[in-house]
Image 1 (tube, rainbow, N blue to C red):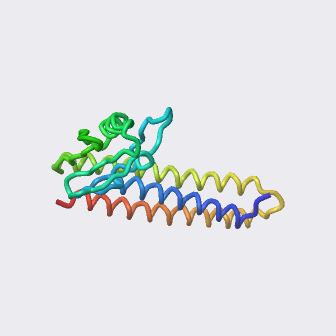
Image 2: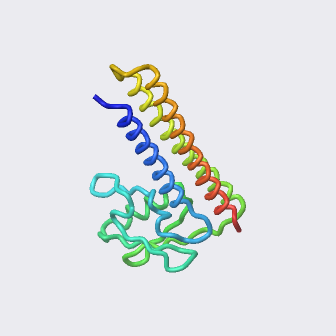
Image 3: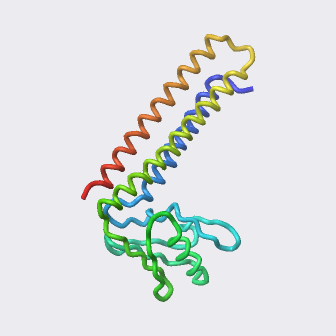
Length: 184
C-alpha cells in the first residue's frame, strides 16, 4: 500500500522525467550551429530493431556548418544515411568512404519558423507527460484507504502545485529554445 508522500514523490519524479525528456528533445533541434546531439532523436533500423543513432555511430561536429557520422559497423552506412534523411530534421546526408557527411542547410526565416513549430510540438508532448503524471498521482490518491478526505485534498493541492511548477519550467525552456532558434 502506498502512502501519500510516496505518491507525491513518484509523481514529481515522473514530472521531472517529462522535463528531462523535453530538454533532450529540444537539444536535438538545431539553432544556429552544428551540435552532435542534434541527431539524438534519429532512430535507425539495424539488426532487426530500432536503435538510437548514437548507439550505432559516433557523431562529431568538425565545423559549425556540418556533422560527421561514423558508423561503428560500416555495413550499416546505408541504413544510417536513410534514417537521417527520413528524420524530420530536413537534412541531406551523403556517404563519403566509411563516413556520412551531414551538411546543415542555412537557416532562413521559413526554416526557423518550421523549427519553432517542431519545438512547440515537442513542448506539448512534455505538457502531456506532466498532466499524465498528475492524473496518475490523483488516481492513486483516490484509491487510498484509511486516509482522511482532508489529507487527500491537501495532497491533491501539492500535486497541482508540482504540476504548475513543472509547467512553468517547461514554458521557460520552450521560450529560451524559441529565442535561440529565432536569433540570427
